[in-house]
Every structure is written in C-alpha cells, then in structure tokens.
Length: 201
Image 1 (cartoon, rainbow, N blue to C red):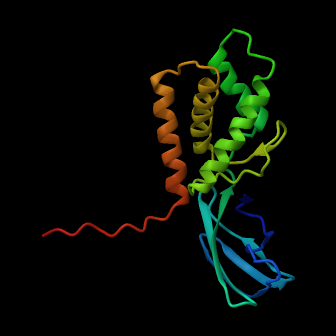
Image 2: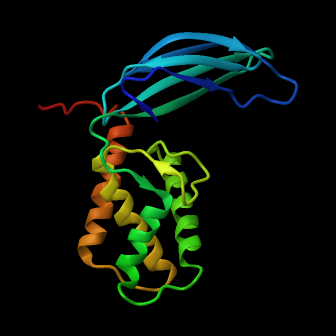
C-alpha cells in the first residue's frame, strides 16, 4: 500500500521459465500515475504517485519474454491517507478476535500464534480472490496493517469466525453478517465491474 501523497518505487518480476528473460513490458495504471519506469535485469521498476485515499488502484502488467512468451498479471495497490485513522498490527487484530471468542475465559497459550497463522492464511486467500488489503506477508505480531478504515470491521469479523472455528465455538449471527458484508466491500473496492449492462426489451 502507499499513501496518496507519496511517490513510491515498486518492481514487478514476472514468473519467467528457467533460462528465459524479460524482453519488454507494458504497464497500464488505473487510479494512480506511473511517473517513470525502466527495465532492470528481469524486473520492471516503476515509480507510482497519486491515487485516492480509501480506494484501490490497479496496474495491468504485460511482459514479453526472450523466448516469445506473453505473461500478464494485475497488481492491486491500496491507497491510504487521511481516511486511514485506525492503526492496527497483526497482534491487535488477533487480540481483538480472541477477546470476542473467549471473553473473560482464559485462551489457550497457543491461541495468539494460532490466530496469527489463520490471519495470514485468510488474507492470502483473499488476495488470490482479488480482495487484497495490501498487507505485507508474512504478517507478524508487530506488522502494521494499513487499510482504509471501512475495511477494518470486515477483517475483524472474518478473523473472529476463523478463530472460533479453530476452537469449536459459535459466533453471534451479527458477526457472521458483518464478515460477509466486510469481505464484499473489500472485493468491490478491488475488482472492476466488467459485467454487461442489462438489456430491456
């Protein structure tokens, strides 16, 4: 993730076959600005500016390899700014979920590590589904996760469900509703709407 006001250097290395190399590439940005880019070894290196706080920009990357293979990937770039006021670490999210699951009861000694493991797995799965929150992996207890404030409730609610499932505990219906709505919100901010319009006869 990047702050809306910052200019940040990124690099993209496509999944090249052994012995192949990057011949050329094209980067097409949406919702941000690529100020400059260059080919360094087998990576596209580029500087990104702009973006709207709370939104997720995307960069469509396409590469041609020395062997003539075409490789494509979409890079998602969450933008934060004044709208990001809730600062949470991996430990903060896990502690919140454990409080909701165990209440005043004592959680198992391994609960924090279990919750952190489930959080990593959950957010990685979301990334694969196109719901990337911009976290840096692996998430440790001290990793700061900067996301738009409206994403926080969805992450918390879904992690509560993951932790409760680990220990065979039930969650209130409202938590389940918040989890579904939260994930839908994150997906809607990441995925473009390519559906055709409705045709009326």
